[in-house]
Amino acid sequence: MGIVEVLEERQIDAFKRFKGLRKPLVDDVFKRVAYLGPEDFKVEGYKRSKPSVAFNPGATVKGRKLILLPRLIFDYFHYTSSIGLTELDLEELLSGSTKGPLATRIVLWPKELWEFLGCEDPRVFEANGSIYVLYTGKGYFLKEGGYERRDVQGLAVFNTSWQLMRRGHFRIKLRDEIFIPRCHKDSAILKVEGSKALFLTRPRIGEGEVCWSGWADLTELIVDANTLRPLFVNEDWEWKVGWSTNALKLSKDEYLVGWHGVLKGDNSYRNGLALINGEGELKAISDYLLAPKGAIEEYGDRPLVIFGDGLVRYKEYLIWVGGISDYAIAIFATEMDKALEKLRTVSK
Image 1 (cartoon, rainbow, N blue to C red):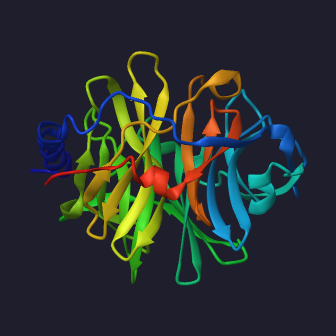
Image 2 (cartoon, rainbow, N blue to C red):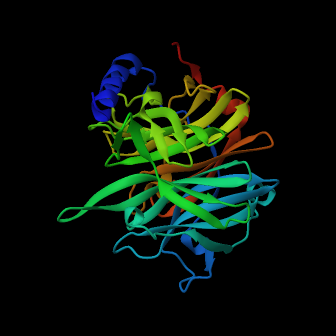
């Protein structure tokens, strides 16, 4: 069998095994700490200083600084995204005294055909003196007779000064066969061992969009198809599921990550948490813990969305840094213990 047939077989088996892990319930444990609109960012080093929208940010923490990588768009005609870089003081943020606008610079923008239509939805991971940013490359592939649209899983590698060292996109390999899905995104690195990374990912296989884990080579940008396995699937009331955030290491063998489901009833994005072990297996999962509410969160260019992309820990708090309805950013926080209480162990 080829790659697609092998992965489709695993996906079909996953729908049989993993249906019923979750319920269509929302237990919103997060407090709304702050909202950041496009007016709260001042872009430097670019002719236009005010983005039209700023949303779906990646995030990481350095001391008491929240390093933020917002997705920026300046034009709505083609909706072409770049990724910016800025920072906030966490103490000021949690006390409600953050002052803007935030000095921001663009660190990633489209340069290759495969990302021609935008660099989207970053997730950050740091290891071995490098900063790895997983992002969606929205673009084209050259085919006989023209271009073919695809969304690929991009990787940008920065040094600690946020200078871009290299970029590329992942391919899936089985024996001598290479497969580039028409849509491959929503990935998060769990750990790095040499040039290899255990990561969470979501390749579209057939019509299925479910949550997988596997191993990838960060140098060759090859995902080993033999290691790919589905961890959970969309329930009957959902169109699809995906990983929402970076993975937050809790212990030597435990990683916390956000996920989302897109509901059939209202087409909204709702989010929960999952606990993954050091082998890339699902240990526990919650029902929905974060859903859009009120005009600020519900109304935008793409309504009813909270999406990604940053999950960080500061003191006793779990902080989710997410985009709201494709126009702004929300900072959500809860006590770590309160969030972990909502996880249910998954039986093997």
